Image: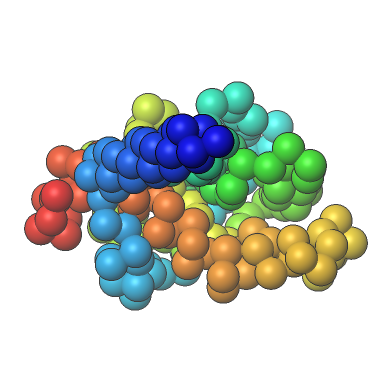
Length: 198
């Protein structure tokens, strides 16, 4: 009885150490997006983007980004994308729908695409650096769109009360999407160049 209690204690301790090491690895390999999210938001402005009818590339990618390790699973975020070319700006833009991976709910990007699909323009909040930089705007590296005048009232019924707080373009969603974008999607080299940190 005593040996099994000691074995359980040692096993639980080993699991705790492995979880701590796993989370440390994920912490060390990512950018400090939370620290610079507000700066990114403050350096953004609203612009009108033109949606080409029937010429959007939608990617409900099966891949997700691991953000941490839990007791018996991993924390992940899902990044779906809606890519289009704006002939006025002569650049590619990509609406990223970034959210925690959840098997129970409908992908929020499916609701977002319904909103964009019937429109000729959207009023998007774009980071000024990314809008004006020559490094952004190609099909391979489009200008990211994390917020636009999403018609949430028209699509309110698609969300339950719990999901509504994190619905696309709501303040809580936008701030968290910026944090996740900076932390996991922006390259370490660019993050260091723009914010002076690794």
